[in-house]
Length: 278
Image 1: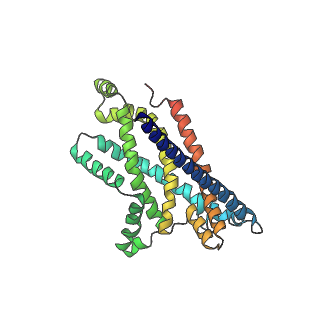
Image 2: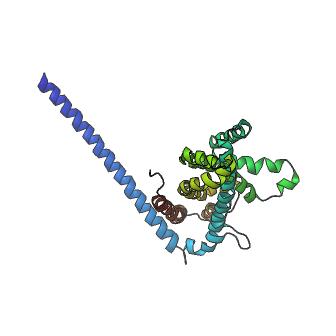
Image 3: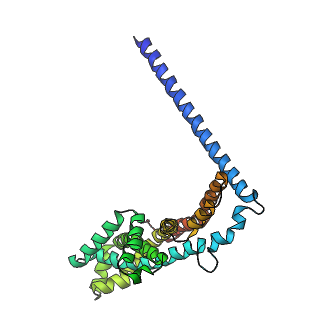
């Protein structure tokens, strides 16, 4: 009986090993095909035409249409402006969130939880389609501005949570010592707590900026000519599928080259500031 069980267990193990080997072979084939397609697409995009699709459209990718700001420049500009204004909004709502007054904390909680519970693309649609329907004046405002407002509203909710976490990371003894020295709660928060909390917030804010750069690609859906939009517009003019794939691989490489240094600097900054260390 024991011998029969051993044989049965052996057969099960062999079958399982066979399945695992087949899966590994399938995954390796997919990986090899993906790498091959990547290099084939990039070579096609760079060398197929007289100067290559990327070379011919490089200025369009970087700066957009002539006479207008667009492309990668607009992507970084929108992300930077949105982060700056979202940081201000985040501090305001983060402080409101931590307030002991219900008429301050409840609206902040409602805003933060609402925005964090819906997709960014939905927030963009809210800002880009609802206000223009209210009046002709609002209809004349450029979509890029509504897109920036949407990114500010969305990112501000997340920064508010970063601010709240940064404030909570400061020892309660700091506030008690500040109050005992004669400072009011507001003065202690502004001059003592927030400067210390900011140190803990910086790496998270850098990561939020990286996410914001990638989030700007969603503005393509409302017609803003940022970097992803320029890639899509160029791919629509090409009939070669390999060229189209190469363009999107190129877009991925550009986003990586922009975002990875920021992510790496965030990790170095976190170690330098000793965030998380006690």
